[in-house]
Length: 468
Image (cartoon, rainbow, N blue to C red; front, side, top):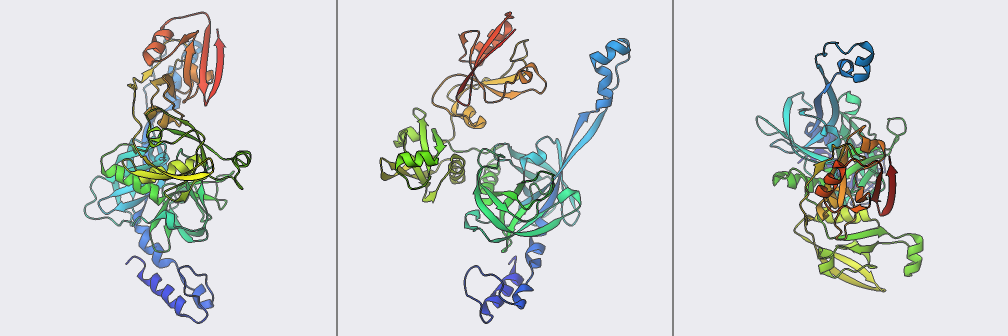
């Protein structure tokens, strides 16, 4: 057993005079204060690795020779400088969750890397393949290419069993100084206003977490992985005692997706738009306090529509677990997984109903037909796609059955970026012509009018822009 010695110590603690026999207990004597977390750290540390991601980028010093402005003043006949490249590295942590060499880390640790390597606590080094990376969840799965036998792995625990005040250890590689173990408590649960991912439900801890800890393990006192350390709240870059970890129950979904061969995580979609309940809304609904999420829109023929969910319904819980925010609601559905059902407790006109809803993958009701706009126009440098439930979910947009074209990506320093266009903008019309497909938009941008008039939908707000 991973923590046999610690478990024995805890049993001794509970047998001491004055100790209260309960599942969780605080130290009550000098003997209890001398108990150590060393057995947990020693058992868990070998499964936590350093992750190195590298990529080659053009050397800016040689790129200057190719700059047209530079060549205008220093001679057009200058020889083309050889394109040297330099290595750019990022550093983080990861957790081995399977003896075959399956590793969990954060997507932002390896997102730009073309070569990924991990170093174990005993200094063994391995090259890795990236099996899955998901920007929405900020999680990625690596696979050691040649593990040469079984590797140390951490068991994945149940993050829903955590309580505020539980002791936890954070293990990682802060600032690249080497593996470090810090101890703290669970400061809060269900943090959903962190601004990191679209499916936010973070464990907050005061265990010291610093740059380089990203992707490392948050471990309970039984030596089980309960979270992946992901972010810190800091104005100066150091630990201020507020760290955030992705719960292990979400990590399980990502691991399972990788084992099934997915390159991204397939997340459930029910086709309902939701908003949090404010104090004013709660008063209007006759509630004594804000609770639940309010249904504000339903896509036609979606699982929510088929289940009988209605605009104005107040969803108070998912499978008996209260929800207080649309992101928390999405998290609960995501941990259930595609292909299952969730039972929603719905307050409708003062009466509570139990409504089962099928959890389906978001469909591509129209072909994506992604196009990069490279013609001289306000859209130059933008990548666009036809709107569908799948594309809308990827971008965190509402979808109510409407057709249209949405911007999925903007190239840096492009004309589209300079005028303020952004991913998620839905292009409604160009020069008075309605845009319903990427092919139509491409054709409109091939013209060269003297004046451009754009109508955009940005998060439900209609923007009208004009350019010469």
